[in-house]
Amino acid sequence: MLAEFGKASRYYNLDYLVGSKRTSRDPVAAWATEVGAYLIKDYPSRRAAADAGLADFAHEVLGDRSSVVRDSETGDAIADVRSEVLHGRRGEWVQEAATFHAASIVRYLAEILRALNMRCLRGSALELPFLWEFFGQYNNDDRDLRGRRTFL
Image (cartoon, rainbow, N blue to C red; front, side, top):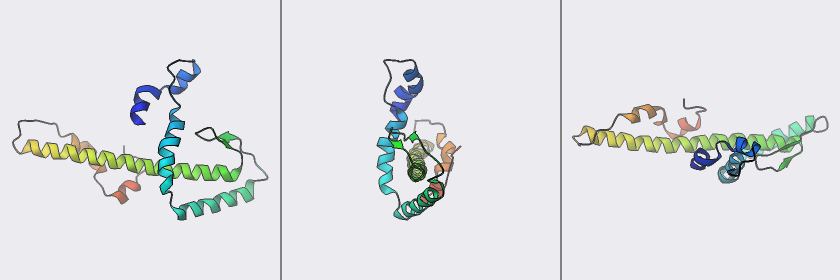
């Protein structure tokens, strides 16, 4: 997904607007159908129940007094307050889970860099800059990585 975005679909909206023949698939829809659909399988049941309660409350309070007319990332219609709240809460959870998984991958790659640097320090002919030092914030356990919002 990330490689495709970097190579082809980064300018999807501009390509779409100008009618480019080079237009790839919509990156937001692709993320939702591939990554989001994969991660939502692990959506905690306690959180789902709490979110359903919040959605029911919002529908009870606002349902007759408001209207919702929008599409989801995949183009499905969202036409009521309850569906909007549920969609939004699930989307937030997917973002958190995706951030954690990406940080876990970076943590693993940083560990590889650190191991290569340590080999170089022990007399190897290979010289590498100490790039792993830039990734210290990823060198935390899963609980700490899950709680992070940003990594800059």
